[in-house]
Image (cartoon, rainbow, N blue to C red; front, side, top):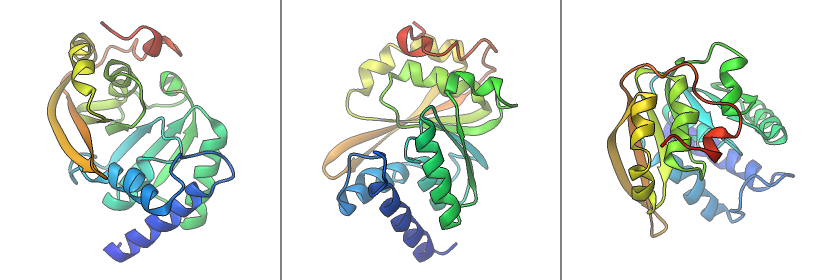
Length: 216
């Protein structure tokens, strides 16, 4: 797909989620949405980060998964626990011909119970507001050895990282890069983790536990 084709597809998708009949984003201005949804999704990501098949946990309106799939032409599975969001994203992707992503309405804690997804993906991505330790528990179990976990964060990430040392050890990942970038004058960070050994199969724990009681 040529660059102009990608950009046109991105703009059409943005229009659909900005004007969706359900609330998928707080950004209703097209320029704001372009910067804070599309650019934020792709700016710090390198072509080899995703591998061939990635998982987007807590995708909401398909962010960042749909934009990563378009930009890097990679296959992705988008998951979210809110079925009406997943249904809408699925329908829009079908209408726009975005065929390299699929979606499931499922909690990340339960994904391992609905299919052969444990350590299945080359990478996992997450823009959710949960702590680093929580995000790692919801993503790392689904990533293969030497795969990556990409976590999008704001300036407060350093304190979260300090509290996630034991989670990294327990889940089999290590931090290999912190990429700083700017969106409309605001500092953003992409935390890049590598999977270095197998995650115990008891992870992620049951629904709600990773959020309420992060690994310490």
